[in-house]
Amino acid sequence: MSRSPYLAELRPTLALAFPIIVGQVSQMLMGITDTVMIGHVGKVPLAASAFAHGLFTLVFIVGIGVLMSVSVLVARAHGAGQSRECAAYLRHGMALALVLGLAGAVVMTVMAPFLHLFGQPPEVVAAVRPYFEIVGWSLLPVLVFQVLRQFSEAVGHPWAPMGILLSGVLLNVFLNWILIYGNLGAPALGLEGAGWATLAARLIAAVVLWWWLAGRRQLRGEWPAVAEPTAGRPSCAEASAVAEPMADKSEGTARWNVRWGAWFGDLRWSRVREMLEIGVPAAIQLLFEAGAFVAAALMMGWLGTVPLAAHQIALACAGFTFMFPLGLSIAVSVRIGRTVGEGRRGALRPIGFGALGAGATIMLTFAVLFALFGPWLAAGFTSEADVVVLAAKLLVVAAIFQMFDGGQVIGAGALRGLADVRVPTAITFVAYWIIALPSAYFFGVRGSFGAVGIWAALAAGLAAAALLLGWRFYHKTGPARVAPERSTSNA
Image 1 (tube, rainbow, N blue to C red):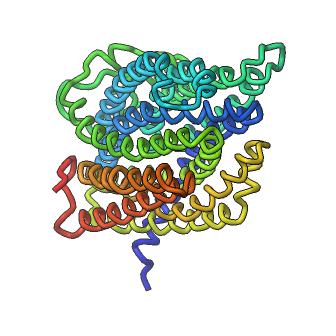
Image 2 (image 1 turned 180 degrees about the vertical axis):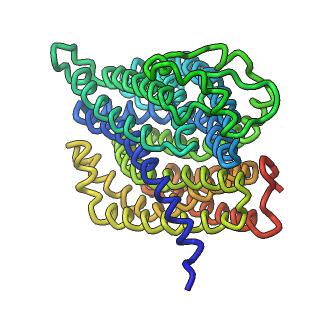
């Protein structure tokens, strides 16, 4: 009896997803370690970090969404054997990352004097500004790292970004230990020290990943060290022949041979437009989702410092588990993009729904852990008893929406691999801004359910998004519905 195509496609998806998941978890661990180490300074710095991260996420998510087009387009070109196309999308992605990172940093710097307008507790506003400004400038290296990481994963090298992210967590913990608490002769900077540690760790991670990719001989065809041909799209073999003159250079020299003209000397609006056609709707989609959680954090601030601090703890736990289906989502997006490039359209549904099944199993496990060990998890972040009690209640609600959270992000990733982003954007708007947030305000702020009501409303929005995105993927992958290669149709 032949093996199910769903199981057959799940194995390579999981093989690609594993290092991506570890990398995502590592990235999340940086935020969790910040939360834990800041939480031991006091609940006001903890609440201030929650407020700052909420606003940072709004800016960060725009850059991440726009740059998601890099993985989709590089994976599709890689599947079709078009190495110089991979290099072209990497070059344009890096240019976009620099522009978006600089713009985001300036926006956050300009916002800093006006944070009191968000209606947060005065003691939180007084503590947050230096941290907020420093973290804002970490947008530049973190977006550059994201482009390099997406490129590396799309061309089949997911392990290096994973290792660098893991090392970045350890570096961030060490720098936090020095700068937050004033060890090794450094001044005790508290929350501000966490900001400097984050900036340094992100900058070093971006530099190290660049260094690693630039030195890979097997990536010469895809790396923009040799100027892109002005016409035609050479095959992988032809691209390797073009790059062969570099073979005489030492590996160390090649790593640092940036050749700015080859990277930024021939940027074309047609490619930028192609990336924006995928990236802008994806950014808006992520912004709708992230904005809902930021709005929820603001509502928590209206309820007081304790609800805001408890929300940060529960969100850190839920965000950690979310990295598992998010890693699957990235792997599914890459695999579907590559499969479209290869012309294997019959494999699309098995790839997408196999990942959905795996994601549901993972999130069910985490849901049980949250329901059983919520108080113990919350106590690991802070010794403030009132914060621990409320955070444990929120984790019970988080246990319920874990399943839906995994389903919606995997469904969105599968559709992104098809370059289908406009209708999913509308779905996320309805789920979060028509269903979740009005319900959160009605039940949590105006009603008597408080913080638990806000989180229950978010769970309802996640459920709606998961069901609608799953249906959309099923609809788009029918025999007559699969979009042609490179199409951004959203019919």
